Length: 244
Image 1 (cartoon, rainbow, N blue to C red):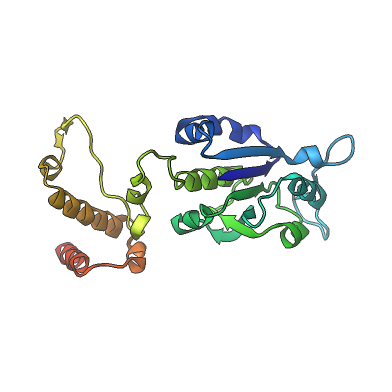
Image 2 (cartoon, one colour; image 1 turned 45 degrees about the horizontal axis):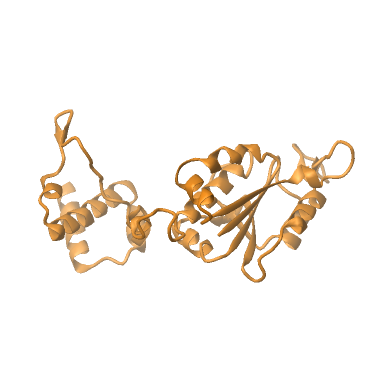
């Protein structure tokens, strides 16, 4: 998987890309990331990338020409490449979208700034618009890092254990069950006995129940999207009766 990031501030991403799982994946050749400075494609001695909006209003708008030139400079993977603009008005980015994007060979992530980008960038250069949440950031760089991280960890070999990503929150629609490690007792709180039993079926059932319990408490809206088994429904009904 290859990511090309168009940004005015490549240094914001460079440090993050050298650390942890993602840094190892890049070093090992499983993931490639290229940082492209949009300012390098701006004209004039001052390399201006923004201007006042037509019609008046506050703030500045990113000019279309530097972004277009930067996109034109990217070596595209024929038929397996998508140019994505990070913007609050884009499609919500979630785990299902991360899986969808992991099927591409190349993602080109365009990071807006200021009041956004000239509308003609959207209509002539962009394949998709993505939003990482219903809030406003100062730019698209954080969104780009979220997309790179979430998509990269789905690529075979990046996490090491091939099933690791399948046990995370939102996989299967539920939040993840609680996790424990040593010590067995911490501040008078013990690891649940079932996890020490060695009975894999009991552990599986406990984890499923805890995932349901956590989702009901923290994100009950997710339960409407999950395909629940009869056992799941009975467990949730019992929980709700207990709360009542």
